[in-house]
Amino acid sequence: MSKQISLSRYLVEQQRVDGLIPAQLRLLLEVVARACKRISYSVNKGELGDVMGSAGSENVQGEVQKKLDIIANEVLIDANEWGGHLAAMASEEMEGIYVVPNRYPQGEYLLMFDPLDGSSNIDVNVSIGTIFSVFKKPEGHPGVTEQDFLQPGNQQVAAGYCVYGPQTTLVLTVGDGVAMFTLDRELGSFVLTRDNVRIPEDTKEFAINMSNMRHWDAPVKRYIDECLAGTQGPRGKDFNMRWIASMVADVHRILSRGGIFMYPWDQREPNKPGKLRLLYEANPMGWLVEQAGGAATNGRQRILDIQPTKLHERVAVVLGSKNEVERVTAYHNEQS
Ligand code: P6P
Image 1 (cartoon, rainbow, N blue to C red):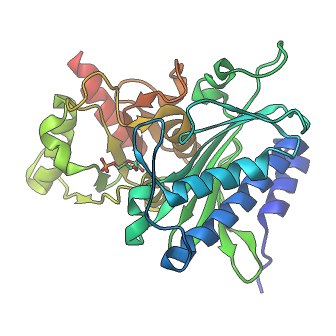
Image 2: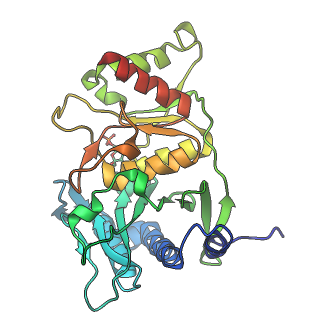
Image 3: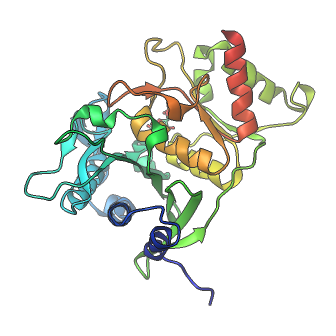
């Protein structure tokens, strides 16, 4: 039987061999993984547990919360607040930051997460996931404030997601490439199933919500029109389209076989730069994609270089196979 490497062993080796992750960060990542395992069990219960449907409340984004949105958020808060590795947390589902209560030791890390991304898919049994991003708390002042969370994505020390699909798979980077761990339900642990994940630089597969076509800006229309023109058009090859409407599932496909994912600015809400969240979706996914040899921009600049101005900042997202992202970005920059 091939030697199975657990997530815990992988993290110990990253800590010991490469000196990449301090013990406190290793502990944090193991706690997040256990929380994701717990969320996976709730997700998998479906109709058998009291976890489906709406919670009858709205989140800070004004979106109707699903019961599982709230369950996942509470699992992550409860799992992480006592360990001594965190100073505070921020969630897509919460308006402000959650400072670790004084009854627990304060740590040096900040954890941000979208507890259950793609939750509109929960009730129809389509893959959903948890996205997380880790920063160090800025030094030089006591306590922690919202301002401490407003760091550009290039300052992340760890990022990842857990996709709850046919398999429950945790995907992680600590700055030394991307690794994938599949949950072995018999063992109850995450086992390394792919290491050094690489995204092909070219692709024939794009992911975008085509129903928004009439609202797109010209560079996006140009790029998609060229893909749709196929072998008769300037690209000289046919493209396929996928849109799961669950960023975690779409990004997992791109990390697994290449592709380009786009949620661009559109004129439906012209004052919003985009639909997706910078801190909870674009930064962690952008770093994972870059660590796997892909690229991630907002159409004009590298996502990880964007300086956030508020916790729930939104951003346009173009990420995936490097050559395609560079083409879309070039089209935008030619425009202005
Ligand atoms: P639309 C899920 O709500 C999400 O935030 C992402 O996971 C997903 O890519 C996108 O929104 C789907 O948006 O407009 O196609 O429903």
